[in-house]
Length: 293
Image (cartoon, rainbow, N blue to C red; front, side):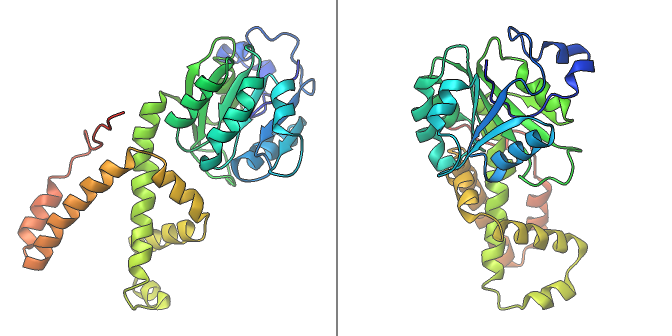
């Protein structure tokens, strides 16, 4: 049996508890006895997975847009297939490989949204399906305090394998539904990145030199500038897809606009007391409005 792995399991042999059940129904698994394939494994998170696995001694097939094994061949020969391509291309890739997977296989994705790709996986294949979202970038300095979200959608024999794989390399696993994941990411990524981009665009129109801002910056503002630099020097298309592909972001933007308009009125009036009272009323519970399907 060929297995395309996401992460290594070199510590599993001596592990206790759930690690003993990493491969239910898959017998005779030994390190180096199976191949690893990642569609989109030459860049971003796919490359991180590839390098991690190669460092642990696994044979890895990392397919890029025009390099490596074809995605169709991976789907036919691998027991687990992981899709790590841009959000806009994910559903198309899933549609191409899904029908080629056997019912005993596992299909996963690594995108930053989960509802749409998981729905696509469920409809395109009879294989088991689990969504996956590493909550860190492709070049982490350490695995300390790193987490990954898993969304089991249709799993049986592979149910415990992904969580065991991540736990074996010290990454915390959060298991939830695609809907709850996207609800959380609308804030953690969508609203957060949007706010950073808005700050960057506004700074670009305020007529102040960057060097002057840095001379006058407080520690808190320096951290904000660092966030601006990270987003604006990063992959603009990726951030745009994260914000625009999650339907739960738009209602948050509408709420943001309402609150901004209210606060802007207090600023124009010079009404510091009303502004302070409104700021003091902030509550985190039930902050995300439901989105109709």
